[in-house]
Image (cartoon, rainbow, N blue to C red):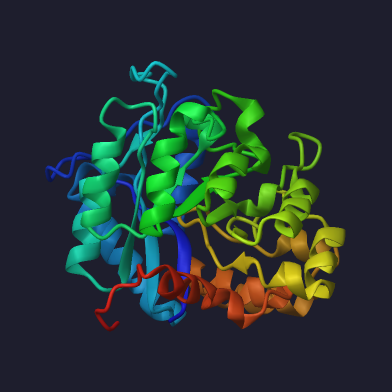
Length: 332
């Protein structure tokens, strides 16, 4: 199975989904770009947005030739004492929404989002495990999730026991308000890895050039130590200036490192090969060819291959889920 391990779903809650979408600060200026990446218009926000969005996403998955996509819930930020930090996030997607979509459609796999400081965190984790979730998704620097806090060890131990993957944002974040910049490093996954949780460091710790710290080489060093650490290449084919030529050369030349990279798009973040071509990481002909792909997901796949990511990165998540016993038996 070819799976995109990193796809966002967004909703307005008009159909009772429980989702909300309230872009704040600089994120307001990116909202029209994200909508265009899905082939949508601002006017769609006033309609049955969830249905419109999911229909567009299904079309992109089919046209890209993928078998499935992991769709991500989005938790609210919480304080360390378990009280919610209200009005700090840009959007919210409840666990029930992604679990329901995955149950109804074999092309979707659910990644839930649970802040471990919540009073009901373990109970909610158990409910989501029973509901078929394959991952837990988090943005530690935006949601105030310090996975090295000893209080979260029982939560992580249950994740390891259940074979649930932890997909954690690492590196730069410029689409959502950041609460804890210190939690952008892959080192915040240390306790989870030592407990035995299979972790995916989203974006491989990369940082935007001249704007944010880059943790790519910390990620690489941690893969040498922890066989249960992986990275995804989501948002690495874009205009965000996250990826350097020497980093891509290392992935191409180091077969062990390459075997730890999973394919992810980060939709609705739009892909572009312009920066990659300008930095010599792909040819201008590859860039021109990518422009012929009308759907962003198909374009992203083509760009990742032009960068040198092997097709095996697209099937690696399915292999992991089979090993962990969490791949649904339903055929796609």
